[in-house]
Length: 177
Image 1 (cartoon, one colour):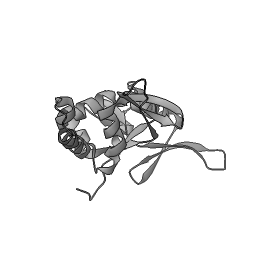
Image 2: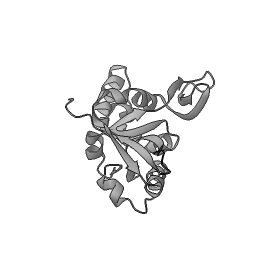
Image 3: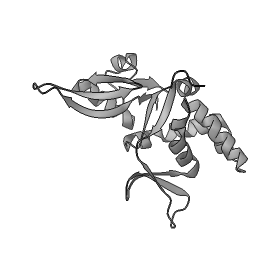
């Protein structure tokens, strides 16, 4: 997945005079999108190639993950749903969604990153912290203890989480280290 959407969907905004726009919050800024721009932004949630991505890239509403480290140091990963935990039947899978309505399932390590990454200033910091915690807990698998592999795994599974709208990417928190 080379282009990902950035921002939290706030929905449609009607001005009370017959006009409307779609609003997306990126950092502390609310961006207004036309219906066509919004369709491009929404399509990026599922990895659909963007026909007119340049204007959304310029506005920070889309970002490239081609350089994973650059992306991860300039963006955060935010949960947008409830963590519903695992089940007795599948203790290795953890779900997220609405109360009593799982929308997506993920592995334990990804679930931990998903639910805690928003406390870090950026995704890379969250991956460093997740790898350190995994190592402290006795994990030995590189996909859990190597921050670069944690990041690669997170970005590889991001399309499913973004498409289900249980997570979003946002810009890095400024002034936090």
